[in-house]
Amino acid sequence: MAAPAKEAAVATGKRDELADSLAELFTNVSLMVRGELQGTNSQLALLEKMNQRVAEEYNSYGDVASGLRVFVEQLNEKNQGFEEYTSQIDAIDHQVTEFEAVVSMLDKHVSVLEKKVKSAYHIASTQ
Image (tube, rainbow, N blue to C red; front, side):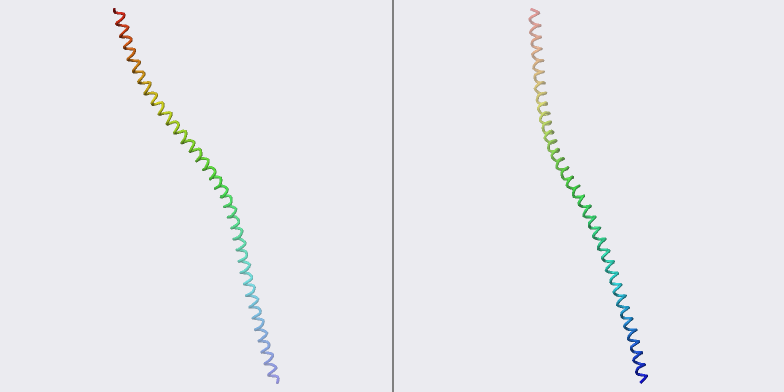
């Protein structure tokens, strides 16, 4: 009878070793999974911070883009005003050209009249 008790004790010892090994295995796997989850949580927290920084950065870009849009609109308005001034200058230049032509014609007419007056005066003084 000692043999079966001894065998039972050896079997119980093996069972305890197996239970201890399995418990240690589950503990190690649990620690490994917990470590992976903590690493993933850290990565997610870092990613969230990075996303927040990018959002803040793009938010300031939005302000810059809005400012640029206003600036471009102001430039467009000034450009339209400049085009209006340019067309006014072109109209004035055209009027000046026409005026110069009229003055030139009047100058020629005055020259002809001066010649006629000198000729008439010269004829009158010789008689």
